[in-house]
Amino acid sequence: MQSKDIEVEAFWDEEALIWVASSNDVPGLITEADTMEHLMQKLKILIPELLEANGLLDESGAIEIPIHLLGKWQEVQIS
Image (cartoon, rainbow, N blue to C red; front, side, top):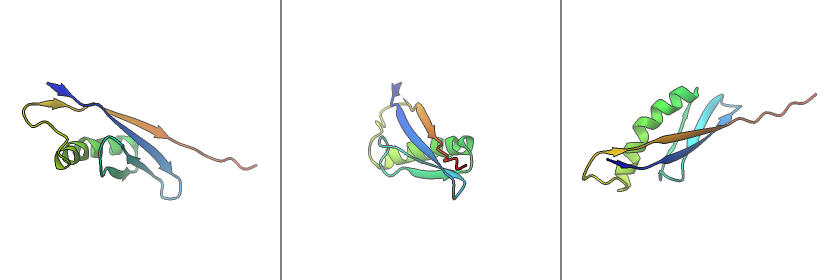
């Protein structure tokens, strides 16, 4: 079984109250969700679909796709 590690970066959009994710490893990937758990659920579906659509999957056998989701949350405190 082949393996293709995917790194996904997500940031918290304070105005929209959602996590926004993208990845340099998956052309065309941009998605959003209200929680990191929901985001990961979406990524598990979208990443294989986009890799296949972009011709980046070897269709000769099963492939394992580990997804590394890195979240960034920044706040500015004004006192």
